[in-house]
Figure 1: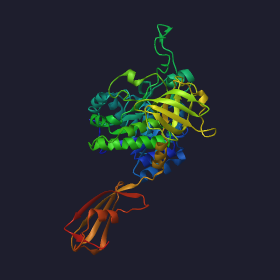
Figure 2 (figure 1 turned 135 degrees about the vertical axis):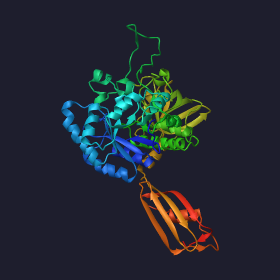
Figure 3 (figure 1 turned 30 degrees about the vertical axis):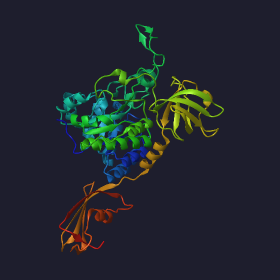
Figure 4 (figure 1 turned 120 degrees about the vertical axis):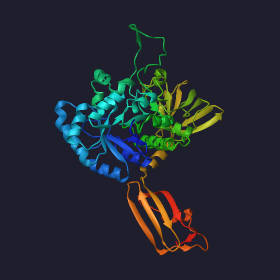
Amino acid sequence: MAKILKKPELLAPAGDEESLRAAVAAGADAVYFGLQGGFNARARADNFPVADLTRVFDFLHSRNVQGFVTFNTLVFDKELPVAEEALAAIAKAGADAIIVQDLGAARLARAVCPELPLHASTQMTISSAEAASIAASLGVTRVVLPRELSIDEIARMAAGTDLELECFVHGALCVSWSGQCLTSEALQARSANRGQCAQSCRLPYDLIVDGTKDHRHDEQLKYLLSPRDLAAYDLLPQLLRAGVSCFKIEGRMKGPEYVANVVDKYRRALEAAHEQAPYPLDERDEEELRYSFSRSFTHGFLQGSNHQQLVHGLYPGHRGVLVGRVEEVHARQRHVLVRAEPDAPLLKAGDRMLFDQGKPEDDEPRGGLHACDVLEPGLLKLVFGGVGETTLDLRLVKVGDVVWKAKDAELTRKMKRIAAQERKIGIALEVRGAAGTPLLAIARDDLGREARVESAMPLLPASGKALNEGLLREKLGAFGATGFALAKLTLDLEGALALPP
C-alpha cells in the first residue's frame, strides 16, 4: 500500500524566486525548482544559482515549506564530476529532496548524499508496482507518476508499493509518453530530455493518410499533437482515495500570478477533499483558472483514454474564456460589435482580448479593453483605447473572428496582491485556568516549536462578564506585524472566570 502522508501535499512550480515566493504566499506545502547551468528539464526558465540555495532553503523552511530540486535530465559520462559537485552542494544547502530521471544520477546521489531523499521523475516511467520496487532498490522514496495513468491504474499501483505517489493535477501535458520526447531533438536539434524542449507538439501538422494529405478534416485542425491543459481540481477526492500523497502543479515556465492563482484554488480544493468537506470552488474560480493559462482544460488520462478530449487540434497556445464572434468592425471609432455566447464572461476595462482568426501561428490581433457596453441582450460593443493606449490595430480584426477574454484585469491585480503577501506561521493556542491559579497559555507553531506563559496574578471568579473565546482571541491572538497568525484556539477554563485585560 502506498505510503500516505499525514496531510496531502500541494507542490508548486518555481521558475524564479518571484514565483517561489508567490507559491509560498498562496499556500503551497512544497515547491520544486531547477538549478542554473544544467541537469534541469526546464533549462529555459530563470532557475536558481547554486550560491543562492542556502538562502532559499532558509526562507522556505522558516515558513514550513519544503523545497525539491529538479535534477531530472539525462547525465552524460563526461558530466559526472560536475553532477557530483552539484549534488553535494544541493544536499549541503538543505534541500528536502531531489527529483531525478537518470538511473545513473540516482545511484550517484545515493553515493554522494545518501541522506537526501530521492524522488523519481515522471520521465523515469514508473507506472507499476514492479517498477516502483526497482526504484525503491535505488533509494527512491517517492514516485512522480506518469501522466498517462488513470485513477484506477494509480489505485492498483498504490496497492502494491509502499512508496509515496505524486501526481500531476494541473498544467501542460506532454504528448510523448512520460515526457520522453525525441521529436524536439529530431526536428530542431534541441533535446527535451536535456532541458531544451522546443515544443514541437505545438506546431501545425498535416494529416497524411496512405501517403496522401487528408483534406476531409477541417482546415483549422492543424494542431494534431498539441494536448489541452490538465485540470483535475474536481478529481482530488478520487485521487486521495486512490493513494496519491502529493498533488503537483506544472508551470516552471510561467509567472508568479499563474502560480499564485493555481495554488490558491488547489489549496482550497485539497483542504476540502482531505477534510471530506463540500467542493469549495465555484464557477468563478474555475473561470479564473482559465485566465492564468489555458489551451482549454481536460482531465487528461485520469478518467481513461479519450483522445478527442485530450487534443482538439484548433490552437496550441493560451486562449482564456470564449466571449463570442465579431459582427461588425468600426476601426476609426475604435470599437467592434460582438455577438456574445450565452455564458460569455463579464468584460471590464483593462481585460485583455484576443481575436482568433483560425491561424494561431500568425501574430493574432489582441489588446486591452477600454470599455464594454451592452447594446442589447447578446450584443456587446467592445471599445478600445486610442493611439498609445493599446497595441491592438482594429484594421486587423475581421468579421467572424472568434473573441476570447484572455486576461482578467481584476484577477491579475488580486493575484499580484496574494503573491506579494508574507506567509504567516500558524499558531495553535491552548488556554487553561481555574479560580485561584494563573491563566496558562500554551502556543505551538507549525514548525513544532512550543512556548508557555502564565499570568502574573491568579484568576478570579467572574462577577460580571467572564473570559470567553472572543475576548481571548482578541487579546491573545493579536500578533500584529509579526510572522505569526492564530490558527486555532482551544479553551480549558473551569467555570466563569475573570482576569483584568
